[in-house]
Image 1: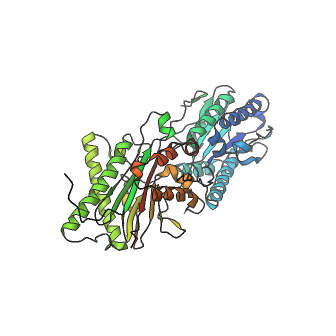
Image 2: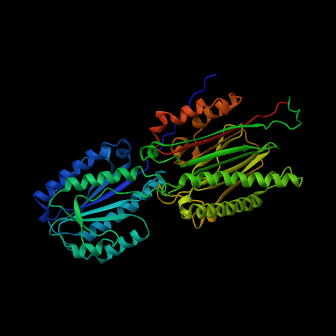
Image 3: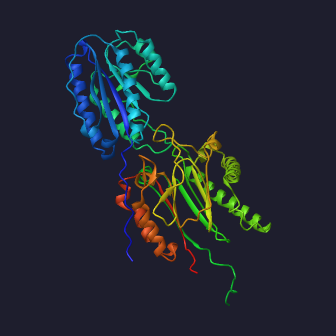
Length: 219
Length: 273
């Protein structure tokens, strides 16, 4: 006697949250921001190649220049249309970092309320300068979160960035990386590749991240 | 020569267990890291154990197999010893507290066996890390334990498929506890019931996403009903495993999960008066 097959329950995909902290200070105007903008398109296109990752990876973008602004609230890559970025003003990096940490806390609360599981979030900072606001408190908060295993923080400096300060904001186990010229496309290819691996991560697997071909780890 | 007619009643349980490699491990050229097995004993007892080797453990598949076989060996020895002492109903006599201590004992024994294996194989204990789910079912109910993720669902002939444990997860989707973890005993979950069950389904994490509603951690009945019907309608599932094998290898399932998959199914034939 033929038996039907087990039916599948509709569960939301595990989420892979990543916050991009993008320096939109005046010095980023022109080629740097244009290339970065193109990098965002690359990111979307690459992640979309993976059906599961498109539903799993969630990206938010916080820009910091004239002000700190949530240019993109968390959205799955499927629904992600990279916002047009404008450069102007100084570099309120600390405020941006604090905003990112708050945003993540809110997002996690939302996940829990809705029974959605998630992977360890990433915060990805891209800057060409130095923070123009007081950054020690933000850095401490960041370090504590890393120490508590709550997130992973990556810092990328474009040529001319203040690596001495960046090194103090980042963590020793993950020092800031100097981008090769304005090769944001390679950076975002790497980020999308990494996100795809994270989104497939099985219990206990150590994720091997792809090699950093787009920059040099600062010493 | 005909075997002597035995007065021992046929075990009322029928069962089948399958562990199948997932797409993820296939691509990486790794073996299936799930293990599963069951044993039918006298007194209408069914033993079952499943284990899911940790992805980061270099000998995860060995760890999972040792976990399953050691657990079943422990239970079988305990049963034999109890019978020799005339305690035919030893499982039925365990209340919640005694069940807790019983499984703590099993866990200690298992950790000892794993340490010995690690020595023999000259590897770290953590190389053998796996989760573990064990049950002892009998005509009047069952006892069960869970360490880590995976799920155990029972059906009692009403409409309610009951998930016995909430799987252990850390904050993040890819975290759980293993037998070899330092604080494993703290995370041991134990269950005891004196209500008979008619259907048991034990599975590893790979099937959680299609069988369990994560919003409120409940079993999704349309997943389990066809499996129960398959068992009920099949006199000897091990002789007719195609239904289960086809399901576990189906594209439909592999699109939803890239993980190794284990299903251990059991059905209790209620004797007709």
